[in-house]
Image (cartoon, rainbow, N blue to C red; front, side):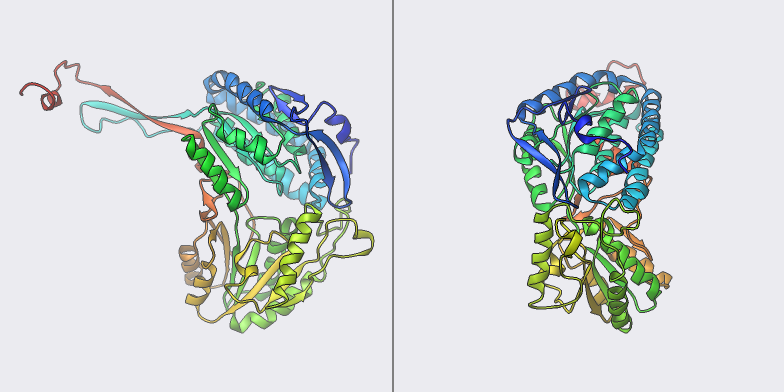
Length: 504
């Protein structure tokens, strides 16, 4: 499916995109992008150093007055052109995403790429709807209104699991609101972020509005977050790293948006459609090989359905086809790296000491032995306070536990530090309403798990962070709200002045 796309040729000039140009890094250290399906190097490039971050921030700062001063219509037109360029290059984006991540090509083709194109089209329209409150005379003597203004240079950090979509989620609302941005993608998976920025240039978005620095978190990432000319940081990644980002950002009084880890509960009540719940659990737990912070990871099943659910999920998992990501029939690709595969396997091996591995729990051999593959895994019999129930595994592993009463099911769903996403499975409207009210998560699906929409916000509760990606709500992160007040009296001596000097 390469369609003539050659990674070495495309990025021969380097893997930094600063001021509209591909450039080499200056850190003196190199990194290999590895195809996790084969273990082979795709591209060797020089990582960004602090000087590259400084150059990217300077380019973004220089571009800010012109871009923020453009009319909403002008920014909207540019983003519409951007969406069109992305759609034209869809095959190249899907190929590169599958190559660097190991995603099955049907996932990158039908989910990652069209979702990103739709995001660009959404924010092209949303750029024209940045509004404050209508003007009014709230005290009778003054007219007040609210302006929404761009805040400046945004420094964002994106993870490796959905590099294209995460680039879009970070970049699009920021630039639609009139900001400029420096994005640091994960050094494991920078290809589609770089291509995204190149496509923006092709669409006529001015140089410096979107910049990409590809470097290590300790160097490029921390320098970007702490940079004095960066006014806002948006980070998606683990809760542990998010805490470090918060420390650096708050030390320089930056605005902060964090989308962190998850451990999504999948609550199946005893009146649920069992077949639908089983299919939803397998799809929801295995999407992107389980490397999804909203993936179904903890299935709580009310006792009457529990045994059948375990049996049927295990049987359906056993039908999932593992293989070459570029084979159209492949359902499950490798994990992002052998290190991540080994981390997932270690969770499962430790769980054997206190729970039952119903199916999976091993890496396949044969033709897949060189890749970072791991079989779909179902674990039963674990205690609520056990590691596999409480910790984010980030692999194709689903843990299932029984519950008796509705109160217990909802309490168990809320019993982790995380609160990013959840689902409830029931035919009962009142049960569904209760679950959506009481489950502590930024998104609660009913009788489904995973679908996302450009029009709807994405973000978490508790240790899953704060702030929103996507939707018009994301503009709250990327705009400054300003109150403007006009005196309407034309009176020199105001009545309130007497509280400061003189008498009435």
